[in-house]
Image (cartoon, rainbow, N blue to C red):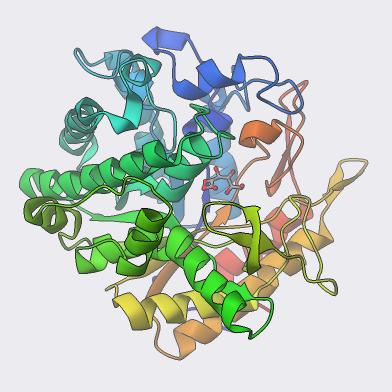
Length: 445
Ligand code: GCO
């Protein structure tokens, strides 16, 4: 299978997961610094203070990307490096780090793709109510504007938010991510403010007028019912509304999905309303939709998830990753085609796809055949969507490096480069060399 000319092949990372240097050069505390230092929050007891030490090894890492031969690289900017207290004075040294990174990428013909927010909110803003507070939206707008103004000449793609569903619901309802809150109403308020901040960022982007395109990355997953019973089909619709449509609808159609609004109200929850002006801002045209795709979700009617009234179901014949996620490559085309038919985005990038599996070290080689077969099957499936006309312009593999997998610490390895977390040595895995061929030839065999 041959991918089209100009197709972006990349890898993806995020600031907290790889940078380390958590107090360096004036950086402020983020909610993930704060959260990971509270004992019991991270399963293996680790923290991201050093992570992959990318803050000090940036050149070495860009050299590894260059050698890999991919023409794009997605990374995120740490807000508390730029504004240690979330707002106020710019911390020039923090900004300089990203200037150097961009210099390095551009010099090596690698197109920079910048995520503006990948979950590391300045703790100072969290103390004032975090994303539930309008002030955070205002501070985000100032933060992104500075970046458009200072880095805007060299960034190919800007991503306003990475996975607002995870931010809102994992962070404020399930309590598994920073800031560790467990309140569905709060999560709903946060989801609205994230959408609003996205729209305001798009507006500011058009005003400032940097080169490049702007979009947002959503974690999307096809939701399937266990059976064709009426109850299971309704459960499927609810979970799909919760996970996928809650964000897609306001972005493309100016409103929250009415079936979900009704459901939440029936459950006695406080659903935020959108004024006409808010709805307009949230749905301002943006250039591309980023899809992060890892697995499908299978549900039945039940009580395991009490608000949505669904049980999760793990099909028996399937293969699972280290994360316990079903390997389901055909979900790639399914989600792309569904989004295309329902929402008609102008352009799509797969901004994340990848896998954690056990790697085998043999001398200086890291063998990861399972990862190669995962990426291969997902790329082949994606190519079918492209062949039949889907506007997919790039694919970003999660991740360049093994890194800090949030609450799971360093126990899950997603990288195509092995990181020895005691010495910080990097060793490219077999999958790195396999992806190198794909990037060089545009072909998947
Ligand atoms: C995600 C995150 C990544 C994760 C990856 C694997 O967007 O969910 O961007 O930070 O590490 O998805 O779970």
